[in-house]
Amino acid sequence: MSKQEPISPANDAIGKLVQEFSKLPGIGPKSAQRIVFNLLRSPEEKARSLAEALVSLKQRVNLCSTCYNVTETNPCPICCNAQRDVSQVCIVEQPQDILALEHTGVYKGLYHVLHGAISPSEGIGADNIRITELLARLQNGLVKEVILATNTNIEGEQTAMYLSRLIAPLNIKVTRLARGLPFGTELEYADDVTLTRALEGRSAF
Ligand SMILES: [Zn+2]
Image (cartoon, rainbow, N blue to C red; front, side, top):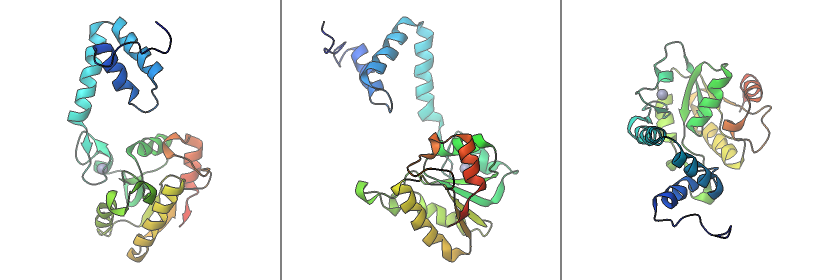
């Protein structure tokens, strides 16, 4: 068999799984093959436990009805935590961003996950992300500061700008997490030191 030929047809068990893994972000066909052959060599228990973890992911994980973070309980543990400062809401694009910010341990407020950013080129407008839900949430009178922690790329900046205009009339302080984050940064990949500096050095927006 030459190197270019696929290892297995896409309709058999190996080929099908290689194809499925290849669709995942960051996994090319070679890595997908490596994973599948590793599983094939492993005890059946390993494959079974992976399969069960995949199924329970979709069965057990939902979105928090307050902040739209992924959670197995509703509201999520952050929204339920009485130690958190309800006067601060940090706006992020994706649930993974919360993981990155929580890892720094410096932020004690709440979050709101937009599930995307405004991107006219991709046809994503304000109505396609969780902005209406955010505005409804800000009506409770408890929130004193909104921290815009969208990515520092064009879509993230556009979204931050749009939100700051919407929030300005609500008499809520709007800050932007930016200092120390180079342009083009996706929050989930930023390191702890940079994120901590960006949080502590947030400025009026
Ligand atoms: Zn929540």
